Image 1: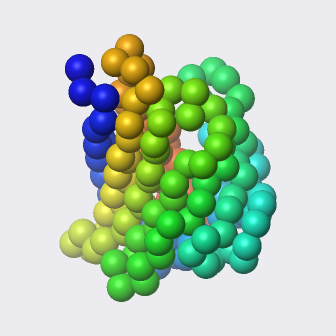
Image 2 (image 1 turned 90 degrees about the vertical axis):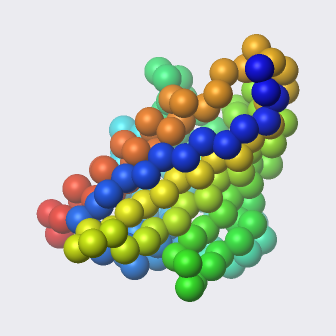
Image 3 (image 1 turned 90 degrees about the horizontal axis):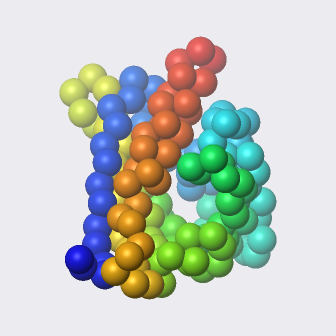
Amino acid sequence: MALSGKRVVQVEIKSKGDVFHELWKSNPHQIPSLTPSAIQNCQTHDGEVGTVGSVLFWNYFLDGKDCVVKTLVKDINEAKKSVTFEVIEGDLLEQYKTFVLHIHVDKHGVNNLVTWTVEYGKLNPNVPDPDSLMEFYKKVAKDIETHHLKN
């Protein structure tokens, strides 16, 4: 069993891709109100929101447990509509020595396609691949889409 890996999940959304990208880039503190059953809180811990180097603290619910994570914004690419987060503290680091999340939005016909890519390094071979997190990311994307389509 490999200790490092990569997982990708794509979600087609009808809501505007620019809005989805802007939310993750500049307004992550609004995400808990759009998907409260998955993400309960997002606070700026350090730096300025919407800039590389800022640090965000998240409370989320996964696999029946309340979890926390602190992320560093590693990259923002406006042309590609992508944001990259690196986990620097929290529950995920109990199983993974590295965990990086890329969120990318692209046009897909009349809709948009959100691609969540996770690159990770496990602490040991008994650690599961982050498949439940990939389902979590799909749910978050759909919750945000549902909110945007209503408003």
